[in-house]
Amino acid sequence: MELLYKEEAYKIVACCIEVWKTLGYGFSEVIYKDAMEEEFLTAQLPYIRENELFVHYKGKKLRHKFRADFTMFENIIVEVKSCDEGLPDAIISQVLNYLRASDSRLGLILNFSKKSLQYKRLIM
Image 1 (cartoon, one colour):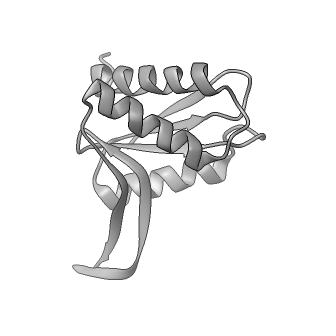
Image 2 (cartoon, helix red, strand yellow):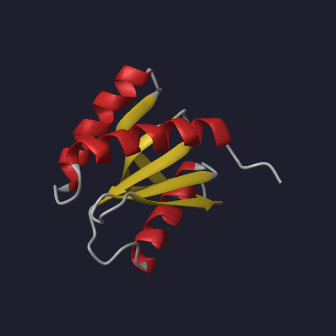
Image 3 (spheres, helix red, strand yellow):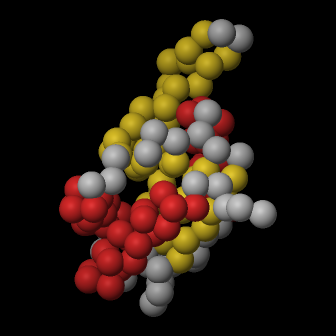
């Protein structure tokens, strides 16, 4: 079985590994996002930072919205975390909601808070 957006996800994770190797763990999420943005620019990867994702209900856009940390290649949601407890169910649910709101099929969660970079692929 072929992985969904295999090459694109590999490029994203490679950038994040570089960030983790350079900064290590313990910084706040915004620092990792800033560093990731620098890596994405260097690698010339298309992204939108803090993309607004709207939820539609019965054909109407609801007032409240989500903000995905990054939308990459127009169809991959990337969520950045710095959680000592790993990747709890609430974070997974959050990214699944982002996927539903954006009609994207692949979500990547990256946790920079451990002694090695953690990441999880979520498929909608």
